[in-house]
Length: 446
Image (cartoon, rainbow, N blue to C red; front, side, top):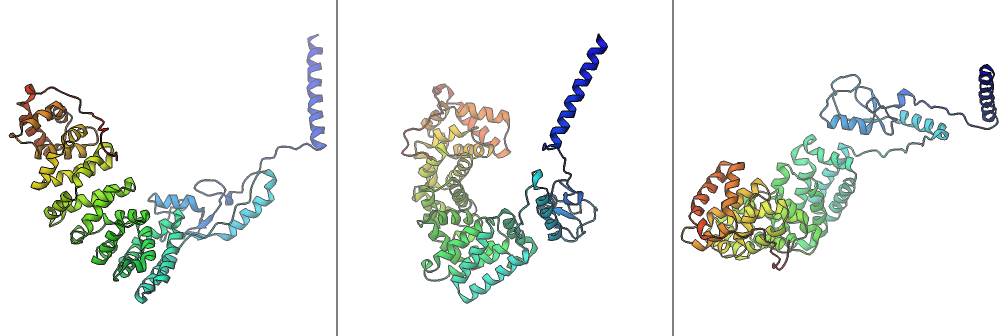
């Protein structure tokens, strides 16, 4: 009985397998595993190469894989372990065509023909274009210069090309690097009587220079010329938002001592803070202002001008809802303004100063806390009892104690200790209130 049941199942299974084989022979498809030839695989990723290139060692790799290998700081060939004499890669058109033909032959198995890759930008092309820009500048040909700068701008849309252009800083002579050449062109076309005459090419140069930041020494030197600085200050007060932002970002790169000599720069920077167009440009302008009021030789005079243009109120409004970077830089500028007598008076007389500064203690970053403590220290006086009582009510005493417990730099620690000694005598005279006010009554939020 058992034997007959077993035989019956065996025969039934054999019959099904026979029917399946006959069905496949009549038109069914057998699963076939296609093996990619080893010489079509990248030795690094082991995947089918889409853009094969050959190194100086004669080994072919996929471009993306070998570029990542080199960008990672490796200076040897992954296969041979030989030190690379050059990092140049040569497109291997023979292997690429073989891979394309193989993909077409095996298209029925799901392989799509790889597209023919565009030839990437070379350092030689960048250098030649820079030389042509220099030549156009010497002839005063702004149309040709605009055409060549536009060419670089189009190249920069591809991330690989952009890296090649920026990488030319180190591969070429400093005076002929792309940033130095463009800065020279900007200086040439901003030296005339009117910026309107060359405004288009100047805008193009500004836009391209922004993605080359940080600039090299030669580029910074050219942009720090009187003509270039006056032109960037002019753009700051213009109507084109892109040009205003580009000028703001580049002003961080220039020499502070030279920038301080530009008569219109203070008004232009205040205009950018009063009429913000974006977080990046606002932070850039605050950085430039901080450099001016902290490092310039005539920083006291410059700080006085900023105070007269009501920068203090703008800074306090920026601190209310500003992000971390904005708060840090605005507090830094406010701290520097407190170094001059008139600035200290304006800061002290503004009703928002004390509650805002106390609120930002320990809430933004160690740097912002350091600036806030310094501002409190500079504006605290034994003679002004009401202000000291208000500081205690806002919770300054407790926050300073916590600051000493969590730790801070020596300068901040010294200021916090002196403030605690000063505020300690007024603790019994004050009733603590909430220092986390939302300041909803302000005209605008930042």
